[in-house]
Image 1 (tube, rainbow over the protein chains, first blue to last red):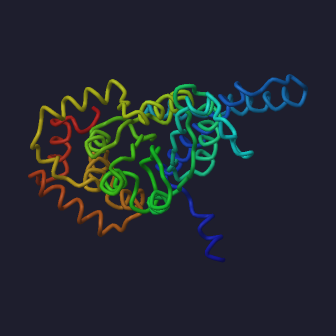
Image 2 (cartoon, rainbow over the protein chains, first blue to last red; image 1 turned 180 degrees about the horizontal axis):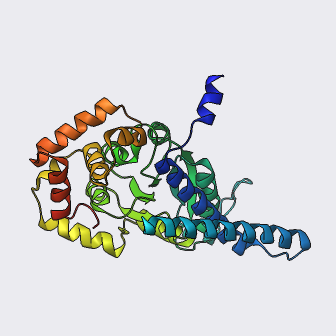
Image 3 (tube, one colour; image 1 turned 45 degrees about the horizontal axis):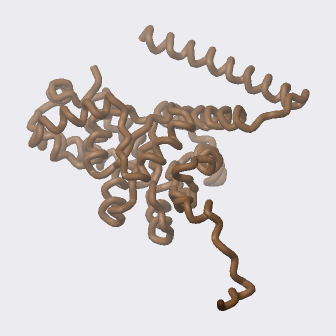
Length: 74
Length: 235
C-alpha cells in the first residue's frame, strides 16, 4: 500500500473528529448566512437544493442529540 | 489658467472619503472553512460604510502564516488555535514580537478559559468562539482593526481574576506546558496527548515532569486539585 493510501485509511482520533466537525459545521453556518443574503430565486432546482440541505441538517441534529444523550448518560 | 493634462481625472468624493480596506489574513487548517469565511468576510465586509474589509491571504499552518506576514501588509490576523506544526497558541507571541502593529483575533473552537486568557495577555486583541455568526466575525474584525478589543463577558471576567492573582506558579508554564496540563487534568493519558498534539510520547512525558515541578505538585491527583483550586479548569 502506498504511503498516501495508508495515511487516508488511518482512523481519526475523537479529538480530531470533533475539531473537524466544528469547522465543517461552522462552514455550513456561514454558507447558510450567505445563502440567506444572496438567494433570490425560488425556482424548483433551488427548492430541491434547500430541501436536501434541510434533510441533511435534520440527520445531523438527530445524530448529535443521540451522541449528547450518550455522553450525558456516561 | 494652465490647462489640465488629458490624463487627469478628478478624484471622486467617495474615493476621498473611503478609508482603505482593512486587510485580513485568515489562518485555519480547514481549507473549506477558510474559503467560506473569506467569501463571507469579503462580501459582508465590502458593504460596510465605516470600514471595509478584505481578505488578502489565507494560511493553513503556522509556517504559512509567518510566510504570508513576511511578504504582505496585513492589519488583522484571524487565527485558529488548532493548527498543525507549532500550533496557533505559539503563534500569538511570535506574531506580536515580529509585527507588533498587527492585530490578532482568535477564532477558535477552544472555550474561553484560562488558556485563552494567556493568549490575550500575549497580545491577542479579540476572541470569538467558532459557533458565532458571520456577522459577528465581521463586526469583531471591524472593531479589532480600529484598535478596539473584543472579548466576550466570560473572558473579561477571567481576565480580571487573572489580574488579581499575579505571580502564581502556573503563570511560569509555557503555552505548550499549559496545553499539556489542561489535557492531563481533563483525564487524557500521555499517549493520547501525544497523538492529539502531534508530538512524541517522550516529549509529552518531559512536559508532564516539568509541569509537576513548576507547580510544586507530586502526582496527577495533586495536579487536578491545583487546577481546580486555581480556576484553571471548568468544574
